[in-house]
View 1 (tube, rainbow, N blue to C red):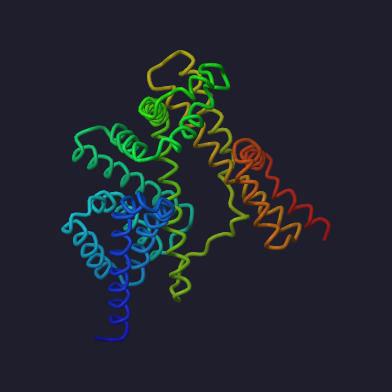
View 2: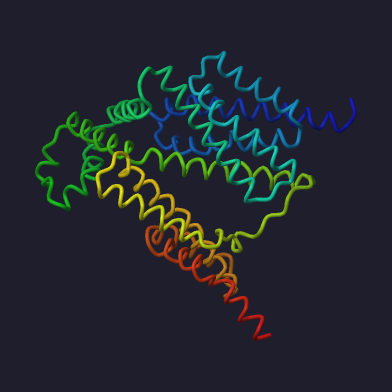
Length: 349
């Protein structure tokens, strides 16, 4: 066996060991969290690492070794009775195959992002379909039942503040009193929190799936691509984050889409309330990202230190994500603020 094949095989074997460790962590962390709650914060990182690792192995080792590595990892986990392995395989295999192809073929970022995100959405639908079939209940009911089960494991002293937080909006608008919140039993509080979560999920599930798909498609393409580039592989160049730009006149699409959904919701047309909520939140998220790009551009124009820039960006995302950043992104898309600044600099020089 030549050195290249040996290297590819070694990467696949190491990838198998790491992936199997991740799948084991995903399976057992919820149980461990009952005794050591803080370990649950590792779960999202473990889940996100699975498609990134899979994609990297596919890109570096090739589809033959990558497929063998994936089948061995997920197959072994399923045979050992890991309940999450089947759902994770369904959710991640489509986006892994598409993202790795886009990286190997050096496709441009926008195409790779859109196609990878669509593959992630297909995977999410497949995983939900399998979950619905095996659990014999709709996915929202399954999530709410699991949510209630986890709440029931908490001490009463923890349930009370969680319930107060869940009813904070009702408290502000006068739908419930503080006395009623304080007087609620833990069982009643859990049932009410489940009802609130169910209502929120029914309205937001499409929006959540779209954001999930966009995020997964982006990270599953960009992170393995960066790792492959460090490994010496030729990959497509991508623009710096500060230069990211939405298509021209994207704001018109957003305005017409949200306006049409609002009109439909105003006439009480079936499903338009969910469509309105979904479109609004998706466009807010997209324009927020554009606003962050504009902020990064501004910090670099000001030649800020990395420390100040990092603090400013994190603070902006935490405190300005709802209005200021999306508005900045919208204005950038309409007016081309960065292009105007660059033109002025060119004229001045």
